Amino acid sequence: MASSAGDPLLSGEAGDGRRRFVPSTIRLKTSVWSELGGAVGDLGTYIPIVLALSLASHLDLGTTLIFTALYNFATGLLFGIPMPVQPMKSIAAVALSSAHLTIPQIMSAGLAVAAILLFLGVTGLMTTLYRLLPLPVVRGVQLSQGLSFAFTAVKYIRYVQDFSRSSSASTSVPRPLLGLDGLALALAALLFIILATGSGDDEDVNRDGTNRRRRSCSRVPAALIVFALGLVLCFVRYPSILQGLRFGPAPLGLVKITWDDFKIGFWEGAVPQLPLSVLNSVIAVCKLSSDLFPERAELSPARVSVSVGLMNFVGCWFGAMPCCHGAGGLAGQYRFGGRSGASVVFLAIGKLALGLVFGNSFVTILGQFPIGILGVMLLFSGIELAMASRDMGSKEESFVMLVCAGVSLTGSSAALGFISGIVLYMLLRLRDLDWDIRGLLGRWGAGRRQSTNKANEDGAGDA
Image (cartoon, rainbow, N blue to C red; front, side, top):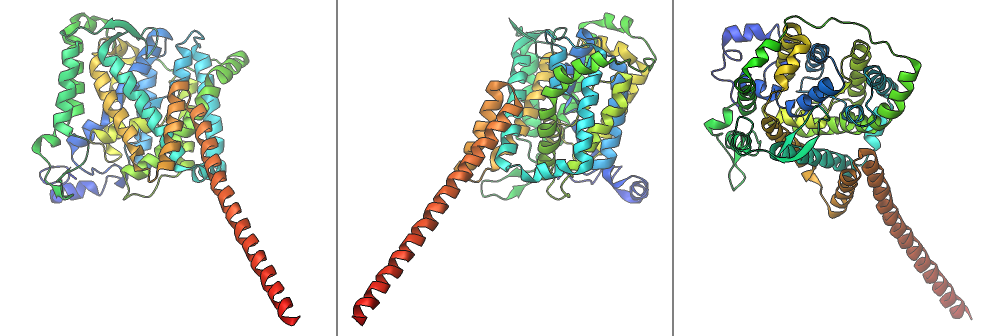
């Protein structure tokens, strides 16, 4: 871990005095710069989805920024880790597809998912499900989600994107080599992050397994620097975007949802989103948090499920994008330095300021953000999430994990991969049970033969 020495917020008597008034969940575990770097670690996922919905479906970006800021504040205080808040991806994908859900239908889908997750959390069914699920199946879901992020990231880096149609609308036009959003810029950002953060470990390890001191460059908040560069380039590329900015928050208003909106939102948006929310937003997040923060008590699946439900029951009525937690976002924020709830609190402050100052007009700035840089940040988030699956202890566990991940990726459905993994796991357990039965029957048969032979010998001796 990075030392807190020299950090004015962590050392000295004055620092100790200030810390008494700071909740333990958001006290800095490393340095301010590390937590700030972690704060932007999941924006490679957040920005493309929110930007695409703002451009194509007229989502109010200002309202979404304000409410997701409030969610970030709450989760940072409650969970004490860099718990991400991300748009519900399946609902966004349906909204941007040919089905093209309206804003009331998108909000209906979010409310339906929220109601189900709230029910599962309050009744304790989510905790029961978490305890019953085999680890290889959970790892398969994580691996597939991580690789999916990585594949999407490579598309962002290599090809020109059109977010007015979809958050993953890659064109066949290769990204130009040079320019302010060129391939060279993306590769330079990639190399910088690798040199600054290495493989993402807190400490470098010698060949004999002993730790050695971290290099000075590993203390650099690489993600924060790269993201700040992207913001600067927005204005360098198109100085005229300043004219499109309007000051002041977007006016809040209740979304009018009809019964027809709810039916369409439920069947078109909530049904495909629910398996992903259960598996990736709750179960995979709880498991990943125990991997990344072994010194902390394991997150309660019930609390995480209730958290997602309450967030959307508040925000969806006002037109904020339905959101959930996500293992990919947690992996990304951890990868770039987030170690406490302070990381997402810093992010909340930034979102809240942007939402209150610029409102929905901030979309004009995000629309010019270099997509290649977003791709680089998303790539590291995906890799960090996928690497959580490296702890399989046997070939059988790896087999289940890889089948689950493969089906999820090729079928583009976490639910399909999950079902395949569960069925395969049960078949392997049944096979072991079959051999156990055969062994018991064999031993029982051998015992009967021995008893019969002994009886025969005793009868012959009496005769």
